Image 1 (cartoon, helix red, strand yellow):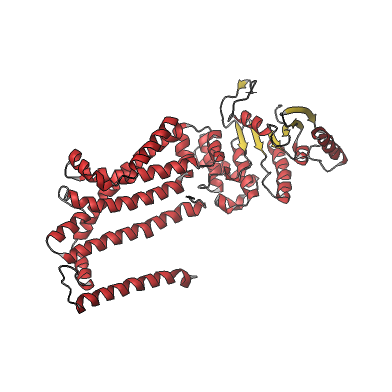
Image 2 (cartoon, rainbow over the protein chains, first blue to last red; image 1 turned 30 degrees about the vertical axis):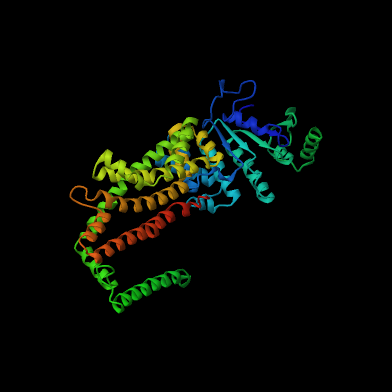
Length: 217
Length: 262
């Protein structure tokens, strides 16, 4: 992967795309080969590679929206309480939840929960942001809005992003490069350079969608 | 809204009042010996006197002090055991074996041993309270730990937490609904155990507990005070369960939208 790019792992369920992301995160050892970040072998999870999960229960239910971000900052970046609060407030505002800083996760909708998770990950200022189908449990409308927002946030932060999805549309909208995987057994079909990032609905984007569909057929 | 929530409470108060009236009427109409069953009014008067005279508060404070000591130690041991159980396989097997062995054993059955090991005194009481609290606490906390969503555990690891810092930062609060229900069960066992145990171990040092107060007054045939002692046991139980634990739940699991599903 290259610095500052949006790299998408795309494939049907069971192709190992999530497993690969979990290996990058350090939760699972790779079955073969080694993964390195800045020349160092990835051996364990760490806040330099923050994961946004698909599951809504990734927020700490006993902490408020702001509290979730503050806690992460204090633990992973060892910030003082005051500095962490200021930094957390900035990122909560960035995902548009400044009116909900004192709400608890169970009071939020699914889309809002995922926004908090994204704010928490970005606040940690990781080397890489890993997203494991973060919008897969959302309804179609919210999902589309979150994809657009993620593009906007990425423009503002330019974080190196590894994004796992089984949605071709999502891959073509978000990925600078798309790694297409097939299942049974998991194989790399191709690494596709996507000329239509953020412009999925243009003729150019639709051509990429058709190309990927052909690869997976 | 107010009417709906208050109504059952009003009816329950009415039931209690009705029972008191029946009790009073029965003892007076049939001239029941006050040595066996004093009238409600006499019991309430005795209760009022013993309360104002500082007798009941003193005995109750002693019982609660011993109980809290035992609960604190029992909870501590339960946390150590469950932390071991979630971090090592041997720890899990140790915990499962110990709880299945000792959980069915009533604390009262250990009193002869306690007497042998610690003699008459506070240590014996604390020992049986620890036993009554430890196993339900350990069982519940362990269930809480293993039911923590794997995603939450990964979030903690992702922040760089591991070992006891992961336990303290993520697992403990995530398992809190279960821990709280463990504390509630532990309290219920411990409160019943200490009252019974105090009757056997009697007075420890200068001040006895409520169980001793009841036992001693039976010995002196102050039956109204025996009833007053029982009334205190009931009242403290109700206060802790309906006021303190409710309050704690509102401040924690209800606010967080968390619940333990057994």
